[in-house]
Length: 249
Length: 172
Image 1 (spheres, rainbow over the protein chains, first blue to last red):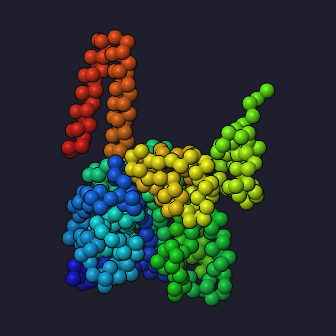
Image 2: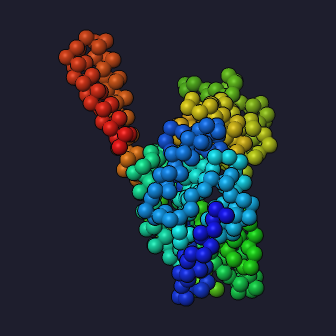
Image 3: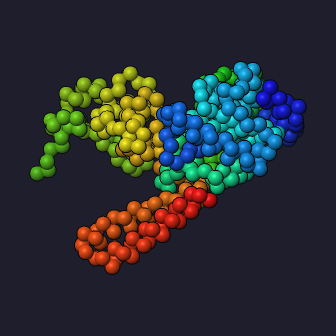
């Protein structure tokens, strides 16, 4: 089994739990990045996807953050392995069903994962247990900066990082906090809360992101917009709403 | 007297004027009555230019074509129809190709229209080099045409230097 090494080892999600804030299970930040002069994965032909994978996979795997981690092409993974990685939020459903020339690199502690040829050429993600946006940002921007030394990103000074979907353009950042909110659900307050935070440009989704249901009263709150604000401003806005959720629950 | 506006689709005079203001930017589409009716623009209150331009999965694919005449990206061959269908773009060049469609849509879906976040140093440096190279190449052609040979020689040397720097950057 290709991903066996991550079972036995200590992982961010199980070892680094924080008792300070039991409501927030984990904090996650992902950055969408694309290479310059190459079509985005959804439109690229197989040889172009292959080039991207062959350029990115070694570049990502050689990062110091990925030392003793796992590097795999999606076709090498069994269905079970893919399911495990999806459950651990290390790859997306979209990547797991990707037909060809897609890959993933995961750090040893499973806090950093970089998907290649998902919706964008690179999806860099950092997971931190508990409520730790600042640490997650510091970590993800570190990986991003190190990669930028190796790869040429598609970037416009006017509208920022260019992404396959215009909803991600700009910072390319989606920051989210996963929260357990049973009291709000039982007291039928959740709908009201969701409506209120939507007004602030914040989305509330189920356990596995877009289109998933809120099994076990677990929700993700994340930023809806990515252009026109700095990463810090977005995180601050999200943190404020997160605080309100915590107080409300 | 001001010239009457023509329909964006045919040469008839336009009588339906769709205007939307997003973040103080005005976006307009002018249509004649029959084209407007054909495109189903009967209720301007419930009609958003941003929706018209990028909402994926809508049944009719006509409104997007009327706005910019069925564009195709030079760099990757991505079509406006494809964009309308998926809501996604084909390559970085599509952002220029479909700029007229994207601009009001981006303003509607985001907090602002300008990037205020992290800037990748290398991409910016490369862009600066490329912009300088393009401008020098234009100047060189002009200098040769106007017979300013000394200036042309200086520009040629600078272009060679720049190309060398770009190659060096790429090989590092």
